[in-house]
Length: 380
Image 1 (cartoon, rainbow, N blue to C red):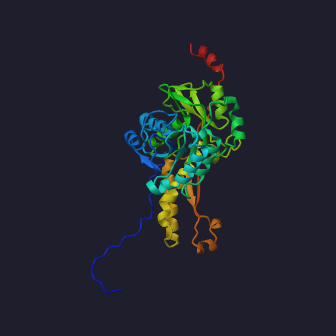
Image 2: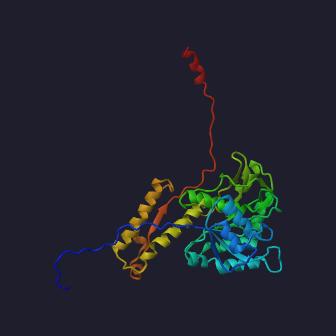
Image 3: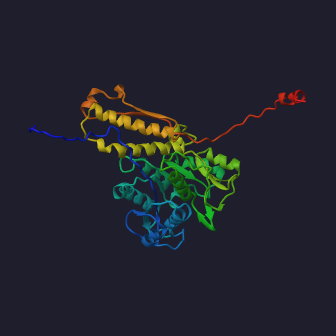
């Protein structure tokens, strides 16, 4: 080092790394009046109309329903739209294979185009085909190699509600990345898919919670005015208990009703069967990947590992204090970090945490207490 006299300053890397704030837009595949190529990130109804066209015929142009529900009803933005053709009634050109191929060709590109990870995937109308629903769930299992999300698909109204569990089984509609909805709903005289409403109801609630998906949409108001079938509480609970999100018109008007993914009741692992917990695991996955990607290829030493561990713990402590999670911690376990792996540049950190599930049942026990009667005389 050359000779120096004077005052100098040096920057030292911050010991804590703030987490990346993430946004997980709804991604919708469907047909539109115009047929632009590739995914489009749209921020308003006017922009949608300019790019995709609009005539409000949901039967032909399924993305029009998505635009109306997202921008006019739930006021959710942005939304990623992908057009697969110009007319859903053209059965020659638009098939389930068309939809599946479009999903496989476009979904992984969305993050690289917009730096937004798809949080929820819908294909209203088309997702009633079990092969499309299965493909949607498979696609959201691994998005852009590293991320995960949820698919929402509809069960056809032609299925009686009592036959829904059997329909799920015979069509293999059981996946922890898949939320099933039933039946169809209406708004101002037009039929809508419940999957569309649930996707944006969920996104609206996430938005109120800074994008953190710890609150399930169940028992929250749906912006609809009717339902294709009148379901009693017993019928709605039957569907809910079989891993289907439905509609209940009980206390508070029309609400979504259900907190379980399609794997339930066959799979009762809370991470896989409870929607808010599954979504929180997906969310944490993205936060960790996007926040600590900057640490890939830095020198592997104790200070780096301590910075990562302490930063994760600070984030988890903050979530715990705000009651976003019930608790969490990050540890570096010697048993999970053999010397051979450390030499090879592999470090493992173990996160223990507990996002909250939904409070689905509240029981009150009532008992007549004669002491309150006997005390009357003593008070005279």
